[in-house]
Image (cartoon, rainbow, N blue to C red; front, side):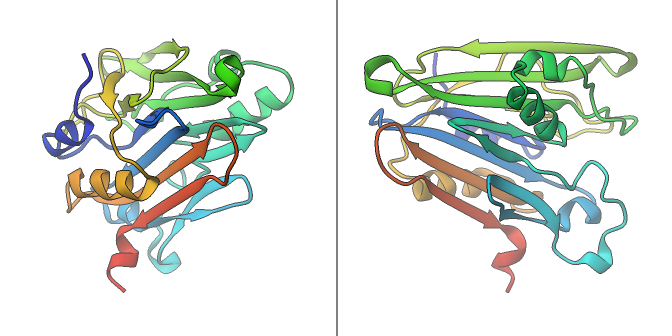
Length: 244
């Protein structure tokens, strides 16, 4: 059964970082959303900015950045028609593997969860691939989560999910955490099957941003990619930009 993603987010003060991949309600667009949240000053001191093939995180105030590891990376990169979305520098690992003829799974078998004891934050990753059936208007989604075994850093659990021919108005969502806590509890279970009803990237961005905890939200990226002809529409919301 499809769930209401905005309702899920409103009920969770700290999902951490989240990936949504799917297809618009009219069936005409592939849909991508990625957000980051933060509890520490260092994590909150970030913004998204566009690059030549996607987006990157950067420090909003360089003088306040204390440790760039794990929080400065390329969340989104595009290789031909394939869009890669992740919560860390495994974006580049996947990009390089695909560019060399390898696979999503092979790339992530070389990686593990983040070394941020005691949370051992999961690495979540996704691919969105428009492909050829029905005039090229199908969407293939792959998702993965690499996490510790219930907080045991000696064991990495690697889970992969593949969804072909995503229906119109539907997506899959995964996040790093089940909610707030100390240590933070890793996401568990399968990715959520969620509705996508927003008619545009702007509408979806506003809905998601309003649903994220206002104290913890940091940045949000949404992109609608036409499955036929047309320009992709990208919306970025940065909390720091709201304060200017």
